[in-house]
Image (cartoon, rainbow, N blue to C red):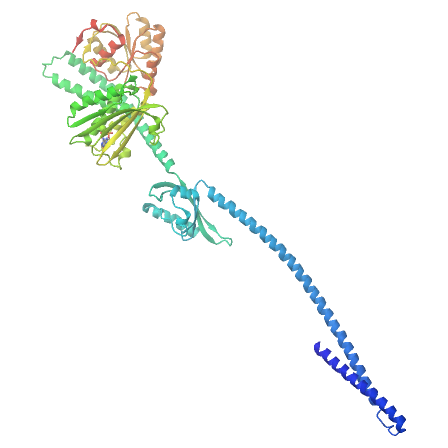
Length: 616
Ligand SMILES: Nc1ncnc2c1ncn2[C@@H]1O[C@H](COP(=O)(O)OP(=O)(O)OP(=O)(O)O)[C@@H](O)[C@H]1O
Ligand SMILES: [Mg+2]
């Protein structure tokens, strides 16, 4: 364009020059013609025309050149305008998309906040790992449970997998990383920062980035230590209960057999003079049966079916008497006691508590075979003192007895098993493994708790909590070593032939007149017929057609003053206890010998003992 314009200007200038030159030539020619009289008439007239034409052409070319330029310019202008419009449009679109982007960003930020707060507020611990197992995020609960903070573990592996769990953990991680197989509720163990071992349940999954490529692992850890502990405790209790039921059943039958043996031996001994050559042997047999019966008693205690004679007693007194007896047998053990003077009374079956104590003393002495110290402490306590223990005690006042020895102590590996029946570390002859099992059963049966604390090589402490009773302490009867005879009439009720057979003989030897009945129904009938003659009834608790409970009720209807001594090998669901509460006069546990029975009968009849002859 510039070239065209330049050419046009050039031509126009040229035409102006020619025009001026042309005009000058015409003027010169006329002047010459006038002054010289046609002397120079032959000049080229066409030259002026030529100059004029050239000038005209130059002007035209300028005009067209300008025209063309205007055209080109307006075309360019239109194109520019179009371009500007287009740009404006794009600008609007850009602005819009910028706004949209801002909104999306804000939304993404909000979503991120929500996810972050979700992770933060989870009740379980959360860890996000990359595919190499390095932690990128841990939730605050993770820090709470395991102790590590985010700064401590970020970009690192968390070394909390115990050696013995590594193989199973690696197998799960491999599946997760390579195949994306998620894991649910994988129960395992993990260390905390301070070295405690926790039971945890792990659920984990692999997650992808926005393009769908696997990026990391989301791992949720739940602390199930408490659940595991309760499960173990429940299993333990269930196991103990099941064995208890079995043992209780066996003990019942065993008791009846021993009742027969003991009764017969008592009868023979009663008629045998001490000078008789068999007298010593008979005494030995009686002792053996009595130790057999002790074993049954332990099983019954363990089965928690033998708690009968419950009364308010002083634990100080029971402990003092039992340890004095024990001290006489094991002379190499020094016994010390620290008794609380204001100790609350307990409601307990004295003989069963004695049985528990004896077991503990013997265990302690066995753990101090070369002699040692046995410390017995009593104190008042409350359920709060048991708060860190595995029990969930009933709130209230308790009496606490501690039996402390400085013997061998108990190995950590076996301490959880010592209350199991038949668990023993002693040789065949020396331990049956029933001592602590029965202690556990008896204390539990009294609404109490027994616990152990021991350090290998340093000694053991057994703590027994028994619920305190508001009642004042019952006067204990003098422990008579004599057989006391009587002359009243007794109705003996038992469905076991052995018991009737031997019982009748013993009673008759003791001077009583005896009626017998082999069932509850028969007992009620006999009692109805002979009520004026019968002074007391010895009544079995468990009988097939009509049990002791119902028979007692019926006899009470006939004579509200009827005196009844209950006898049983064991009681199902505490039936004996329940009958005693209804006003029954006493209880004797089978097997019993002549002496025990003679004492119990006198207690029930509450006759003036002076009118009866004591025999040694
Ligand atoms: N004071 C103690 N010191 C060390 N070990 C003890 C103590 N008390 C109990 N044990 C351990 O607990 C085990 C179980 O005790 P438990 O009284 O139930 O049975 P036992 O004494 O072996 O047999 P049993 O009491 O039937 O004669 C014992 O064999 C012993 O290993
Ligand atoms: Mg023992």
